[in-house]
Image 1 (cartoon, rainbow, N blue to C red):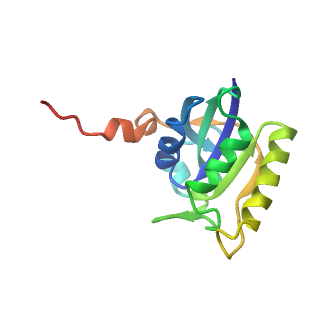
Image 2: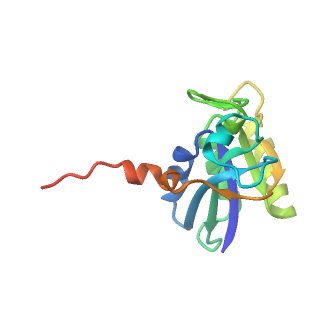
Length: 155
């Protein structure tokens, strides 16, 4: 099993997009890239901790590889939006790839260059590519949020 971590706006939607991919074993939402230990959602929302809302992914590289995850990441958010996605704004909603190895770093950088050259957007891709730091798990009510919110119907 390997690990990947992405930030692309509110972690609820990003988690839901990755959670259902074949080869993704586990997704966990949380915070990364900041300066405060053990941050809470309320702290991160102020923008003062420096954290991004992220999705931490455990995946089976025999089924889906890191490069495929990065390429999928480009399709599920707007990588040209500096510090906002949709209606959410602030540094906690920035677009970022947090890497765990030199190989992941290289693959992310190459993918970013290729995506930027693809012509999908005519403005620069602003996704940061940063060495992964401490991952702080978000509060339980954020985990698999969309799954928990699905209505249940009685037949």
